Length: 127
Image (cartoon, rainbow, N blue to C red; front, side, top):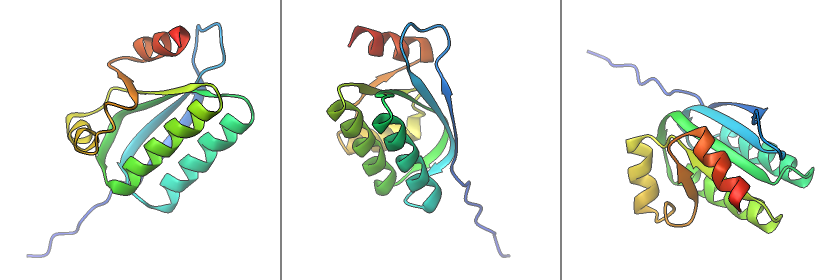
């Protein structure tokens, strides 16, 4: 019996956070956050937004199935890019499997995270 391994390709959509006084971009991710071209496209898209002045970023991980070390590195680099630009990055709705990997990588102690988008936006509004 042959089993086909199905890899869920990363997809992402960016949008402005609604109902906020300041410019906050929300990136909604789905699939696997692995070291592949789509993940690096996400990284470049966020960096371009930061360079254009949108330095407050929410990354919604609710639909992310898996993450590897490259994905961890991408999140870390995005957090660093946002903070260097005077802003911040908050992860929201981190699934248990992803949370476990981020905890092992000690990234949960370094990147703000929240249960809901509203909580994530509040964290950015406080900062």
